[in-house]
Image (cartoon, rainbow, N blue to C red; front, top):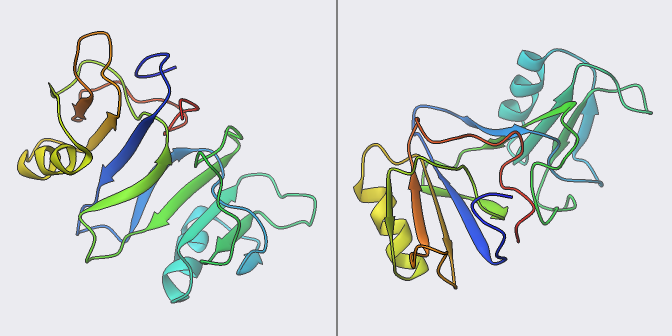
Length: 171
């Protein structure tokens, strides 16, 4: 379990204004009721979500689900999981980026592993500020309780370890 065995970590992923849908790791995101279901390719899945103003997340699989569809669009009334994406690595998840948002909520659980870009101690607001101020920061995680090193904020860049499922189950 990353970043450590303690509970209480939170994860935010920095939004890139040049992308419309953010990669959110392997695993499905959200649950019923779905905004819409379709069959198609990954590119079609993304197109369906971008074309639908109410769509906030899209998930797809190479294999169709029990209903014969392999694409699921979610809106704000769709079920939200404590940890998204979930452990079903046969599904892919993308979250629609809101241009007005600098850091996207990515559920409970830490994101990424060492080597960290930087570690700090501070509040949730300070954690977000550290990441926004550091151009190389792509993700930030923090906890109300410090880790073994005494810090409760960890910044990640592109050289930090990536988990198959982020955020992980460390709530």
